Amino acid sequence: MATRRIMSIGVVMQAQWPSRVFAIELDKSGAFLHFALREKAQCTATAPPPPPPETFTHDQRCYSLFVCGGGGGDHRVQSARFHWALRERLRSELPAECELLPVSSYLPRVQGSLIKGYFLKDASECPLRTERVLSDLSRSEEAGGVVVCSYHHQRGGDGSQCVSQQVMMWPLAENQHVDISKQTSCYVVPSEALDYHPSALNVANSDVFYSLEEATKVLEECGDIIPESRAVLQLLGQRAPSRHSPGFPVVVIEGLDATGKTTLTQSLREALGASLLRSPPQCLSPWRPCFDREPPLLRRAFYAVGNYITAQQMGQEASRAPVIVDRYWHSTAAYAIATAASGPVSSLPPEGSDLYRWPSDLLQPSLVVLLTLDPRERQRRLEDRGEVQTKEEQELDLDRLFRLRVEEAYGRIRGPACVTVDAGPSADKVLQRVLHLIREHCRL
Ligand SMILES: Nc1ncnc2c1ncn2[C@@H]1O[C@H](COP(=O)(O)OP(=O)(O)O)[C@@H](O)[C@H]1O
Ligand SMILES: Nc1ccn([C@H]2C[C@H](O)[C@@H](COP(=O)(O)OP(=O)(O)O)O2)c(=O)n1
Image 1: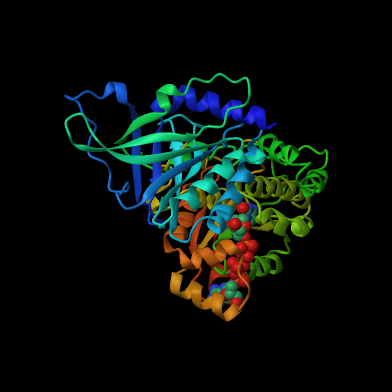
Image 2 (image 1 turned 90 degrees about the vertical axis):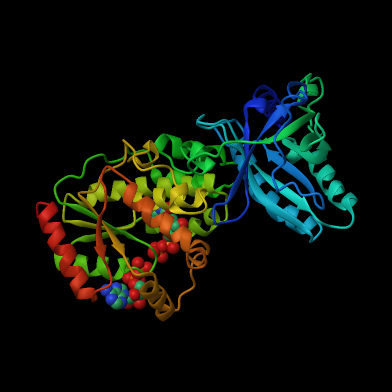
């Protein structure tokens, strides 16, 4: 297994290294540094590389680590889990003076080309400790696919300062003859930035799944590692997913935590004599904490499958009475897209992007209502409720930008789009407003 993974990163990196762009994420506000590599042979005295970006400072040693992953490769589950665990491992093993930043390597405009890694700035007194950690990492069996590079200040052909990248560790399987001589030492040059976060290149089928088949594939792939995924697939059963809602309307209520979804959905059930469902469905509750601890690939596949189970229930219930649903596909896609990106709303995939489309095989509700709330009022309601928040919801409070990205992503999803309702007025006024919308949009 390790050999195949090493081959894949060797081949991918060797073939594409000179065309790849590396984006170092400087902080959560969305500041990025994009750079490319240029072979030294191409850099003559008349065309020296541009001056080094400020990130590569003289007083800190810099390294990058790239983990083979993403895409639809054979080992994407192992790679995703390895990359996920690597951050904690590096944090605990590296000297405290090491700063760890996410870095993405990608081919501009090529879907699925993203390889994730970490950029390391070491300000400690002793470089040996850091290098020992990196060397141990590259030797460990599970880390067969890690490429480690270091960065050095040099004088360019015309005497100007420049930064070069050197491959420190490129673990190749025995009998592999990958020529890395051209890549062992390159100049680092600034590169054009993307208009959006590079994660958008790998959102499809890594963060958001556009068919049941793609989502179940992930759970099938991790059956040996996470037995819970087999139980989830069993619940999905053999029945084909419902595509059309028969008879009565199906109304989905969406919104951030504490916007009033539970309050409203219960009132709607009473007012309309409706069935009340939620996604993920109750039957998945025992396994939710397990998948919430996993990397996005697995966590999002779990929630995606949850929507299809809820869709089966919707199909059954809507033949008897109106159906109200607490969260559905909008939540799954909006949280996934907003988490994959960082920084301001402008870092999201652009409006109209195919990433906001509805999966063609997932039952479409008759109406989706998005509850919005002033952030201070939402905070007040959260505090009043005094409940433990999920990790992601805690992050919502810490990260204003994240909340803005989730809300914007909600609004960009199409097929059906959501109708926004201000959840600030009293619970009864919100109920009356939504009942009015239901009468307007659905045949009751
Ligand atoms: N329209 C409203 N006005 C004032 N408080 C509300 C309103 N709707 C809900 N609440 C209160 O806000 C808190 C969060 O509501 P809840 O329905 O649990 O939200 P969610 O299900 O979206 O997390 C609860 O304490 C609830 O009683
Ligand atoms: N259909 C769904 C429902 C929730 N999710 C994810 C999105 C977020 O990570 C969490 C939010 O769920 P949470 O339990 O915090 O929300 P509520 O308490 O139900 O309002 O779950 C999802 O991906 N798909």
